[in-house]
Amino acid sequence: MTKRKSFVDQPYWGRPTPGWGDPRPSLLIVGLAPAAHGGNRTGRIFTGDRSGDWLYAALHRAGLANRPHAAHAGDGLRLAGVRIVAPVRCAPPDNKPTPAERDACSAWLDREVELVLPTVRAVVALGSFAWSAALRTLAAAGAVVPRPRPAFGHGAEAELGGLSSGPVVVIGSYHPSQQNTFTGRLTEAMLDDVFERAKGHATR
Image (tube, rainbow, N blue to C red):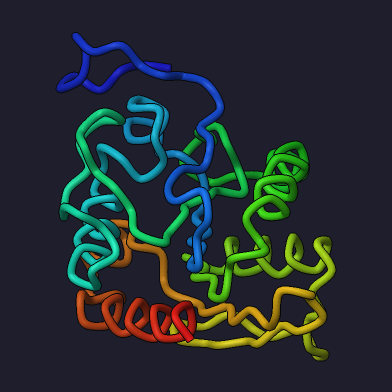
């Protein structure tokens, strides 16, 4: 991978990027994949890129993070009751993961979700790719997905039953990518609304 000029003097993590956050979360956030010069560089998902700037600022406004910015893996950022995972663990070409990459990483997502699921009450899926991955992995863990399968949309909600720990509500949100935030397709108010609703479900 060619380093970005502004980071040319920095080492890149350059390996699969794990989930991170509270080990007993009530809210799980499902993203897409580490950005080439974000998580792939810093070793922590949504860290060191514009998408992360939006995400962590929103979590801070919702009282779910102790600071609004994420610069590197040792920057002191802490999440309260929140864990962030990605269906694809390595930076894909052009930030567009393929079905093959998704399938190759699915066992890691399944296992991580299985470990934290007993305390999870709400899931925020950032984008349609994350929405599909979240429904698939929750179904693999024993959750009952409604039929017909719920369609993704910003603000869409689906309640999944069948788990011994209780129902889990999945909420869709547009991904905080520059293509969505620069165009106004996703605004701060829209993202704040999603996390306020998710926090309400997670703390019920």
